[in-house]
Length: 153
Image (cartoon, rainbow, N blue to C red; front, top):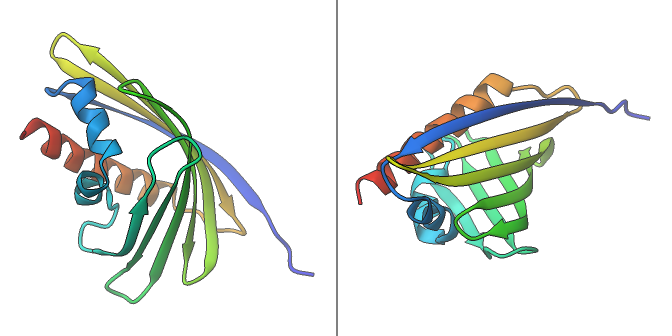
């Protein structure tokens, strides 16, 4: 029998935008817009992407890194409150090997200067995989591209 394990951790990221919460939320909800900013590996293009943005809807993302690693992300949207909150769970695999599962909550709020988001990711790393700094950095890079996407419009 193969030994299995799960290691749990989490992180929280916050961003401020000049754009309204509705504009930032729309960038998460629209598949074409989301595909432009969301990839955590900026040098990689999706080889497959589909999104059904509704509670119970799925997002499928596939890509291949320059080193040949095939990434697979399977997501389900658990809760969506327009312009206020998105909760989703996702699993990540590399070359068919499960790496992690996560629960993510994204909270949107209008401010006098525009809006803010707070992203909380709770992770279960599987069978010895651990890349928390890389995961956090990739998520930060995606949020930086989101900022450019919505504040430029």
